[in-house]
Length: 63
Image (cartoon, rainbow, N blue to C red; front, side):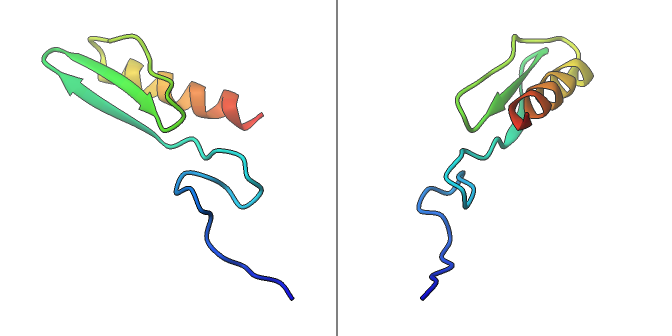
């Protein structure tokens, strides 16, 4: 009998590895990328650079 339930931890894949969900927040003139795994980027004045940091982290964590 197979039970196909949702993961017990919201940011976890079915195979048990953590799902990396990134977001960018702004504080004043700075933008910072954050991930559900606890990673965060340096504060950037460029939103585009903060988004790129998040994308690079997501790509690196997928390998």
